[in-house]
Structures are given as C-alpha cells and as structure tokens.
Image (cartoon, rainbow, N blue to C red; front, top):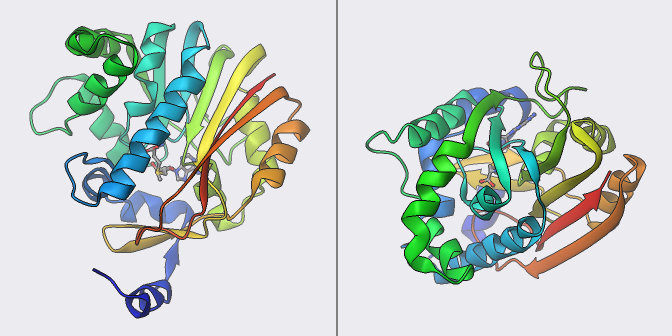
Length: 266
Ligand SMILES: C[S@@+](CC[C@H](N)C(=O)[O-])C[C@H]1O[C@@H](n2cnc3c(N)ncnc32)[C@H](O)[C@@H]1O
C-alpha cells in the first residue's frame, strides 16, 4: 500500500513523452498493470470493465466497412464489439513493441496476452457468452492491418495513404501524444482528416491527467477537461457530439479525474 508521501516522491520523478515512447514504453508492464482482470485491486479493474462497457456502447451502434484505431498500444479490448459491425478492423501505434504484440496475438502465437476474459465479457454483454470463441476467431480474421502511426502528423498513418474510414477511434492516446507540447486541436484535426464525410469519430480518455505510470516510468500527458476537448472536436468540423463519462477511482498509476468517451460525426 503506498502512502501520500510515496506518491509525492514518485511525482518528483522525471516525466517522459514524445519520441521517448520508442525506448521507454514497456508493453508487457502496460498489459500487466492496466489489463490483467485477475488483479486484486478491484476498484481499478472494475472501473476498467466499466470503461470497456462505455466503449462497447459507443461502438456498438456504429456500422461501416472499416474502422481505424489510432494509438492502439497492445490492446484490442475496446474493439471486440466492433467486429460485429465492421468488415475490417485496422490497428496502429507509435511504438514498435506494441505493434509486435498486436501482430503476435493476431497470429495466435504462444505467450501472448490473454484477451479471452474480455471476449467473454463482451459476449456476455451481447447476451450470449457461449459465443466468445467464435467472436474471437471472427475478430482475428477481420483484424487486417497494423500500421505505424503518429497522431502529431497531418496524415497520422504517413507514409501509408488510405481511403477515408467510416469510423476512427482513439483511446488513451491523444492527450498522451500531446504531452510533448504538441497542439491538441491540431491533433484532433489530423485524426479527423482520416474520416469520410458522415464518418464517426470516437475518442476515449481520462480528464485532467498530467502523468501516468507504466513499470515505474512516468509519462507526461496533456491535462485537459471536457470544454477543451469538445471545442477541439468542433473546430475540426465535427457535429452531433455526444459525451459519456464515469468516475475514475484514486489509483497510484495516474492523477486523472473522470473517464470519458466522445462520439461525433464528420
Ligand atoms: C496509454 S497507451 C493507450 C493504448 C491503448 N489505446 C489502450 O487503450 O490501451 C498510449 C499509447 O499512445 C501511443 N502514442 C504515444 N505517442 C503517440 C503518437 N504521437 N501517435 C500515436 N500514438 C502515440 C503509445 O505508443 C501508447 O501505445
């Protein structure tokens, strides 16, 4: 159990950002600390489940040919229900070790992170938990490309040029990518540029977070609130903005307040 004093000492540690993700983002530590469902610190895990429920709800009404996720990290859990509504699920990340983890899971390699509990959870939400293995295989088939990306670039998938997408998602990434002082409004514009007219943008993150920790390494994030995020999305020319939020419990990993999911149309 950490004390307030411990936390203050941790906050004095140097904060990392930008290009440092290449060398300092520990993929295995991230999965272990943020996604293991059997960890005893129930509050956080339960809240992560609620966050999955949020993204499930936000994604489950949206349909189309292709959905692109930007800054996927090594994680697929947010898109499990999307496999029912899209023919292709495209993932991307800045950090090579995260892209490798996604590829290994897709290829069914041994010693990869176990997403089965997440598949069971979503199948249960959809009313038929017994279908989770079929859902998993279906998901693998639909998981087509895994690209390198940098949301700070005008075309975040540069040098790849894609047809505009029906849906673009990004979870726990844009504010993290802006930790190096990158302009948040410009990043939302970059991400939205990948959408076709009428396409849907889904963003999810935590509010007011200035730092978060993985494997003992602290990363800087841009602490923004609801107004700033909505203003950025409006300035990028999107409309029909819907906002969902839930409380984040106090954790040692971050100084965030609430979690949100935003859905908007181009
Ligand atoms: C907290 S993780 C979130 C990963 C995943 N979306 C999830 O929900 O578990 C932040 C991710 O942002 C990625 N990232 C950092 N800077 C980025 C950038 N400039 N462009 C795209 N992704 C970036 C990191 O590699 C990392 O995978």
